[in-house]
Image 1 (cartoon, one colour):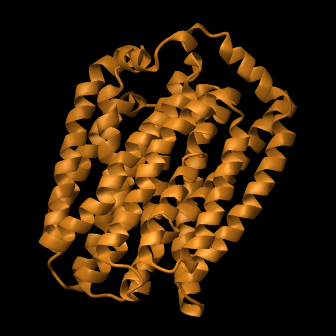
Image 2: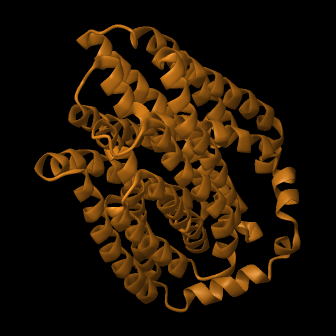
Amino acid sequence: MKVYKYSNKAIVALCTVAYFASYFSRKTFAVVMVNMLEGGVIERDVAGIIGTALFVFYGAGQLISGYMGDKLSPKYLMFSGLMISAVCNLLMPILPNQYLMIPIWAINGFAQALLWPPIVRILSDNLSHEKYVSASLIVTCGAHVSTIVLYVFAPICISLMSWKSVFFFSTIFCVVVGIIFLVAMCIVLGKKEKEQGEIVKDQAFCNTSIWKIFKDAGVIPLFICIIAMGFMRDGIEGWLPTLYSEAFHRDSSESILVSVILPIFAIISVFIVRIIHKGKAFNNEARGSGILFIASIVLCVPFAILINIEATWARVICLILASLICACMHSINFLLIGCLPGRFAKTGRASTAGGFCNACTYIGASISMYGIALISDYFGWSATIFSWACILLLGAVFAVVAIKKYTQFLK
């Protein structure tokens, strides 16, 4: 029993480190984008397309990764994702023009997709649902810590060297983590992975259509909620440095550095949601998501007003409001991407469910990167924040629609 406890802790730790490296190599472009725009390396519309390309291929890749994660060895999928991402980060700073960055970052999006569904498979195979939820929290926090490190690390690199160095350091980090992860996971898992695969194949649910499983569970409306969450979460994270720089006329290094507040708020909010997840309201992922969507709509109102006031106090409050909205989205992400797929572990489709849910996230994210670029360019940031409120309302409506049937599924 002690051996299994030790192995399970090691598995969670390895998945957390791998996801940490994944986020680090995924967000490099978003972090240095404001510097690339200022330096004339890329144009705003091309920057939006590059960000969209990553999210589109990440979302599409989730479907493939989710399916493969239930059929193939997840550790090799994760190792492949980290290695491909390392190559993409290596190429970005040395490409001769901005348009070649689009396909390279799209490939990085697909590589990133090879991480989360296999993680869901590994954790759900080795842990009970309650421990799986706790493990998902740890892995998710690893991603947030990675974002904090990157937001602090990037300005230092840029000031001492250039924005290109951020990509180069990300490459080295991914390669080192990928090799350590694969070797350590092979040692820790041993024969357990093969035995678990054989158990899954014996389950009757594996012969049931995944769409029938989703329909019976009542989660299809929640996919719209996930799209709305993805739009808001990645839209705010991707464009906050630019919003802060343009709306309040601050330099790019400060804009990047202040963005570190986003993952800090996200970590705090996810821990709070994990604690109250055991309660009646948030133990139902649909109900909990609806509450968080409504709270975010309320936060958008003062944000849209204060964004036009060029004063220090307004700047601080806007930053806090943006962080709170983003924190709510990360909490919804924890409920619908972290907790919900684990509900399908007994069907042998945890990886597939995780992949499909995460794909929906990046449908929203891909729309947000280019959509926010267009809205902010033509109508300004106040109109952009109003569009956020509309997206949040859509998420709230579909969360309410899903509550009744999903509650029956949980019972």
